[in-house]
Amino acid sequence: MNVSLTLNGRAVTLETRSDTMLLEALRDEGLLSVRATCGIGVCGACTVLLDGEPVSGCLTLAAQAEGRDVTTVEGLAGEPVQRAFAEAHAFQCGWCTPGFVLTARALLAEKPDPTDEEIAEALGGNLCRCGSYVKIVEAVRRCAS
Amino acid sequence: MGRALERAVADFKADGERGFAEIVNEGGLDPDTGQGVASTHWHQGAAAAHVTVDEETGVLRVEHLHASVYAGRVVNREGAELQNEGSMIMGLGTALMEGIDFADGQVTNANLSDYNLPAAADLPVRMTHDLIERDGAEVHGLGETALPPVPAAIGNALQSLGLHVTELPITPERVLEAVARR
Image 1 (tube, helix red, strand yellow):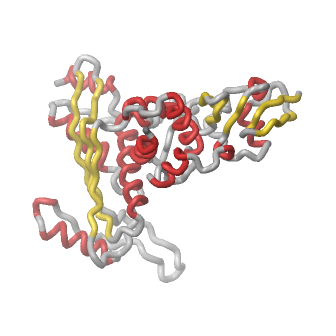
Image 2 (tube, helix red, strand yellow):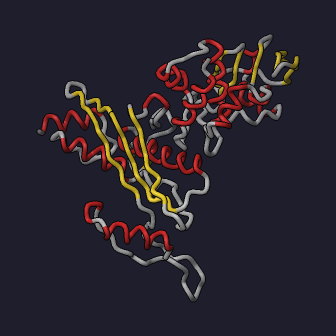
Image 3 (tube, rainbow over the protein chains, first blue to last red):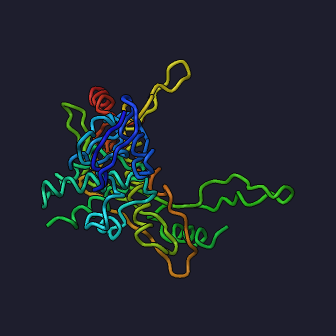
């Protein structure tokens, strides 16, 4: 089946199957920042923005993106949140970073000045095995208005 | 034997309050085969924890976690800090959350749904650490150095409250058992 959507600002049509997950469809498009990890929506490494909302690509059918707006970090062009992650050294191995960046971006769009508790709560669906949370939270804090 | 280790050992011996250490010079290369020889760990780390316990629910809260590691000469400041912070957070997971279960010899934790990792909201209320540096010291590995002492520090903090938990992870259920035993 064909799924037409806006992917990182461009109108595209993905050739996919009705049972293909968005994660797989995006990786097939070469968007490798979307990490295939736990596959059950626990780790947040495959987070993408669907109409601005963070969702797990592994739990979202590609077909659910029909007519909608999907953003991965490949679609961000050096936004403040990305620069903040770089400046705060908010990563070690970097596997989880795209998911954290997108979750943080969605949080800041909704709440430009979140408290530390709100930041920690919003990032609750993203896991970092390196344990870089101190600097990840710092990066988000730096973006707060 | 690295100069950094010798220096660290000298530090330990010079100040009895910090503890006692001796050089165990293992490792190196086998002269016949050139293969590496297994050795004891050569890095020094310590941790301390302040915890509070809700004795009705068994929920333990780490109010303050501190770790000190011997860092030698720090080359990448942020990277070194990240290693320490990450070690402490991973140690926190080992201490409180991460348990592997077995049934008939098989691991039954199928995925992260059955194996909790710390997330951003699980961090101690306060977390601090030291990178102990020395001028002229060698570059020193920091990976996981601050990790092993963390579960012990949290367990000892519990012990100071009269709650002796000897198994990891220290779950609320195990804390409640310790409350009942006290």
